[in-house]
Amino acid sequence: MNVLPVIELIGLPSDVNSSFERGPAEAPSAIRSALWSDRGNLACEDGQEAGIDFELRDRGDLPLRETADDDAMTTAAVEASIADGAIPLALGGDHAMTCPVVRGVHAAHGPVAILHFDAHPDLYDDFAGNPRSHASPFARIMEAGLARQLVQVGIRTLTAHCRAQAKRFGVEIISMADFAPAVVPVLDGPLYISIDLDGIDPAEAPGVSHPEPGGLTVREVLAVLRRQTAPIVGADIVELNPRLDQNGRTAILAAKLVRELASLMARNKPA
Image (cartoon, rainbow, N blue to C red; front, side):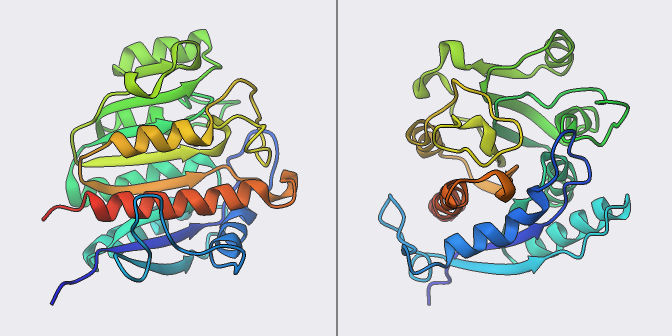
């Protein structure tokens, strides 16, 4: 009997480390509402379908309390998901949550390659005195040795400090000024994918706290994802701010990305 690959959603309703606007803590419920809505279905662009070709399971939201203990709780939930035979797909929340998720993945799989979509590199040593800021997760990830490679796609707000940090950590940045899907490398596994929704142009993803014009199209993001062939051991979708969304457009987009990421995880699952 064939056992379906299991992709497990983990809601991370936290925005305590956001630097400008609160609201991303409300995102997991908004994404689920769009995902399970009768407005659409669970078919994916590669022909796979949730419930037929893979199981899309939901661990629910973690009871985060805006304390340092949230990171340990997040890491433990990711480790438990992997131990149960699932591939974790985290729903943020702000981007600070990526670090404890990656820590949990690292505990099971060792250093990962990370494919990161974003307008911002999130490499600040600290931001406004907060080393756990949503502007700093990849500095924490790289300095802890949780990733052996970090490729950032869609960057269009690279400060001098973050440029120096990228050089320090050996980060490969693919800016929007020179972007084409084909220039993004096909990474070796184990692979982790992090999608900050403000990496997508605000014309298509208005519901974010830090909109930056000139971004990726949804089609370009999907083209980059489709080229990846390595086993995916975890992923996240972060920085949806439902308070700033327009008619749920960004939540609907996030739900589509959940489906497409889950389908890619199932397609690339090791034999």
